Structures are given as C-alpha cells and as structure tokens.
Image 1 (cartoon, rainbow, N blue to C red):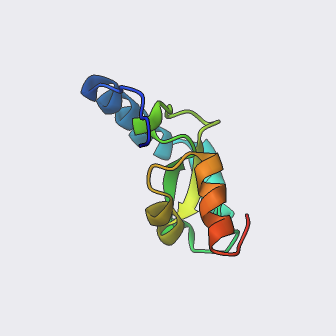
Image 2: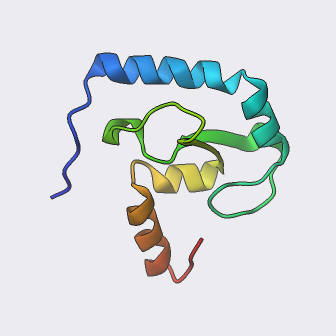
Length: 98
C-alpha cells in the first residue's frame, strides 16, 4: 500500500493559498505564456494550462516556483497525486516517456 506523509488540513490550506498567489505573479504568467505542458510537451493556449505541483501537496510538496509547473488538464488529471518517479513509471507502462 502507498505511504502518504501526514499532511494536515491547515498546511494544505496554506499551500493552496500560496498557489493562488503564485498564479497571479508575472513569473507564472510568463511560464504559461509559452503555452507548453511540462509533461507532454504539447502546445496549448495559456488559459488552458493549469498549475501542477510536481510533488503533490498531499505528498508533502510545497507551492514554490521549483515545484510548480504548467500542465494541460489531461496530464494534470492523469498525474493526480503521483510523485515524479511514479508518473514516469505510469508513462512507461503506457509505452511513452516524457
């Protein structure tokens, strides 16, 4: 069974608030302006890209520039709360790699 570190609700609330603030920064606007999904590399209109935490908040990740990437909705939905190594394994099972 997967082990998830204990992340309390207050910490999640705080990190989600930080993510909302991060989405309003010029740094984030410049990232999505490129229109490229971090995971599949496909082009999308900037408004179709979502903020994804590489290390998910529920797995102990933070809302920081080093942990947040633009992702298309399909990749973000498929990745869910997987860690980078788990996501890579998932792609390999599908016969793809990043």
